[in-house]
Picture 1 (cartoon, protein in one colour):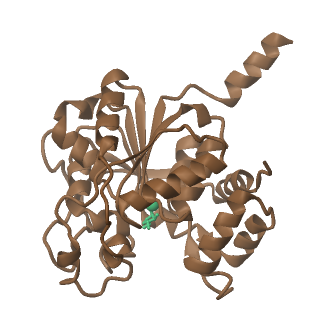
Picture 2: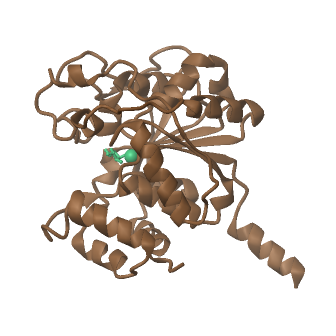
Picture 3: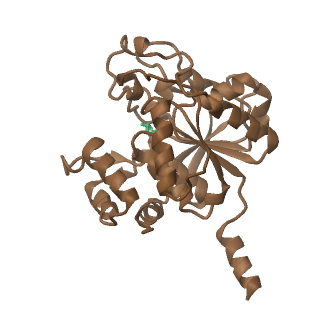
Length: 328
Ligand code: BDR
Ligand code: CA
C-alpha cells in the first residue's frame, strides 16, 4: 500500500530542478495566474523563490503584489525579492520620444518613491552557484534581472539548467509596438543579452503561440464564479482593470505568462516548436525590441532558442481553470 502511494506521488510529480519565478507582476494579471498555477501544481515545492523586475509596474510595487498573492496561496514565507528597478538602457525619457506605443507599463506610471535593495540579483546568482545545472528560471517579465545577473557573473550562464521565457514575437506582430512584444520592448538590451547567452536551454513562448489562447468573458465568468480570495483578485484585475470584462463583456485578451507556466509544468502540452537563432533589434527607433530571426548564431557562445509555436490548448485551458478555481 505504502509502496503504491509513494509510486503514485512520484508519478504525479516527476523530478524537476528548482524553479525561480522572475516576474513583473502588476495587481494580479497573468503573472498572478502564473504564480497560482505554480503553487497549485505538483511542482509547488520546487518553486524556491520569486524575483521581481520592473515591467507592468515598477518592481517595488510588484514585490508587494507578489507577496500578497503568495500569502493568499498559503506560502507567506516564500522569498519574494526585488531585482533591478529599471531596464538596462530604456528609460521613461526615451519612451517619451517613441510613438505608436500601445502599452508602456511602468513607463506610464509615476516613478517609485523608494527603492528596495535589489537582493533578487544576488539570490539568482547564489542559487545557481549552489545548484549547478539544477535551476530553471521561469522569466515572465522583461529580462533585466537575468541579464544583470549574467553581467555580474558571466560564468553562471552555463550553470543554469534552462530558462523558460514569455516574450517576443517571431513571425507575428508586436503588442507594445507594431514591431515588438512588451517584455522585450521594455528592456531590449536585456533580452538581447539573454538570447545571445550560453544558457544551455532556452524555451521561448512568444506572441505567435499566445495569440491562439484567447481570454474571453466566458472564461473570466467561469473563474470568478468560484468566489475565492484568489478569484476576487482575478475579478478585480481582469474585470475592472485590464481587459475590463465587467465594463465591456466583449473585451478580449490572451494568455501569456500562463502558457509559459503550463509548458514548464507539463512539457507534453507543447505540440510544435522550432529551433532558431534569435537576436534583438536594439537600435532606438520603431523596431526597438523586435526579435530578429537569424540564419546563424549571432556570436560564438550563443545557444539556439526553442520557439514554441503550438500547444494543446484544450488541456492548457483545463489546467488554467483547475488551478484558479480550487476552493481553499
Ligand atoms: C507580457 O507583457 C506583460 O504585460 C504580461 O504580463 C506578459 O508577460 C505579454 O506581452
Ligand atoms: Ca508578465
